[in-house]
Amino acid sequence: MRENPFAITLDVGSSLANKTGSWRVERPVYVHRLPPCNQGCPAGEDIQGWLSLAEEGDGEGAWRRIMEVNPLPAVMGRACFHPCETACNRAQIDEAVGINAVERSLGDRAVRQGWTVPVTAPPTGHRVLVVGAGPAGLSAAYHLRLSGHEVEVRDSAALPGGMLRYGIPAYRLPRDVVDAEVARIEAMGVTLVMGSPVTDAARALEEGFDAVFVGVGAQRGRRAEIPAGDAGRVVDAVSLLHGLEDGSPAVLGRTVVVYGGGDTAMDAARTAERLGATETVVVYRRNRDRMPAHDEEVEDALAEGVRMRWLSTVSRVEGGRLVVERMELDADGFPRPTGELEELEADSLVLALGQDADLSLLEGVAGVRTDGGVVAVDADQRTGHPGVFAGGDVVGGERTITAAVGEGRRAAAAVDAWLDGREPGHPAERPVATADRLNTWYYEDAPRTIRPRLEAVRRRSTFDEVVGGLDDEEALFEARRCLSCGNCFECDNCFGVCPDNAVIKLGPGRGYEFDLDFCKGCGICVEECPCGAIDLVPEPR
Image (tube, rainbow, N blue to C red; front, side, top):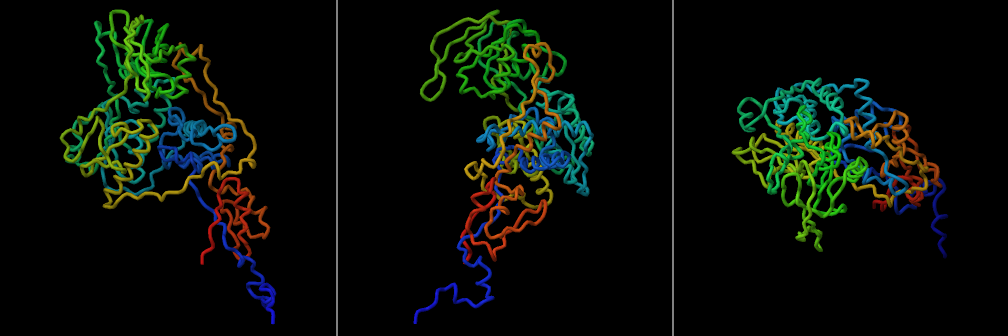
């Protein structure tokens, strides 16, 4: 006797007859992937998270999400070179989301409206010394204070900010912005002691501090072995920028040559223009493709009249002129001298060849190892001496403001763990939400909002801020350009395309879940999810 087909042998009312999900061999699951912008942020910000709050119109909530990680959003919205935007998947459609501009808008709004950060953690009774009031030190102090520790910041300079104040010109970072964000940290109970250099980090532990964070930055300009008949005509870029902030700007003359190819070289050249130079030339050993300065800094310098002399090196200084040798790149891109010399008129030469950190306060500290002018630390910013931590420019690496803020935060977490007798925790790694998972045709075209800029002809006579900000409406529009890569934003697409009505809406802010009694694992929801927030996985046995 022939058996009936499987489907009609089922008893009426049986679970298999009604719950069609039993046919499934794969099931959909909602995933939470790491957005590429988050991955690209050295400070560790949850960029997608605060952009989501911003696009909902919750500006203060977005700002507070930033402040969970970064205490300097108004500063960072100006001085960060936004690697998050380089990583942004939106560039595959039109242009990257203006993350940096939105962050600045939120930071400025917080300053205008006087938003503050309360310290809710109970006092721990621990005292921590932070050496250096730059971005790494301020970040460490902020997060340590949020954990309930008593924090004192000491710095040899007259005013706080470190390289934010003494290394970045005011036309890029106005001083009132630095002052406002530092004042907010002070208002939390952090003690700033300025004009107070620390000469021995280990001694602080003997003086009653329970831990020390060293974030003194790299504020010593490197010198070059260039023969100079008149050494008074040679100044390093760090001293130039520092003296300008101290109210004692260098007298550079009318014709200035800047030797170097990084962002500091661009800052020095643009500063020379503002100090009255009629001709400023940047001399760099390689070509533009190999120049470490960021493109926007180079473009601004060119717009302001700075000339670039590629493939050249300064051989010597003779009176009111420089002898420059032409270089050429070998197969590996390394510059080689050609022997071809030329003279350049110059009233002064500004050296912008990099900076070194003053590590004298760590000399002789047991267990602390230095190599190549930087302090050796582990992934949690710990040195080899118990209770001594370091971050920012003193540990090398990227040497950016954003990286310094991130290292200050990581160090604070490690200090807190050490004082509590435990190991620092680390978040679980998540797969990155790559562009190939997106269905970009679901998103509308939305051209990027461009920040206004001061006219180039007006820049050379003033230190007024060059790049303007977005107003609240523009920032809202820009935030809404975010694609929410790899994370559900409740668009209802899966709910609408499911042929089995197996997607259940849980309510605003709660997302969805799958009714696996009826989901057949067809994968339509996976294919049609705009942001790639659903995976199809094998059905468990």
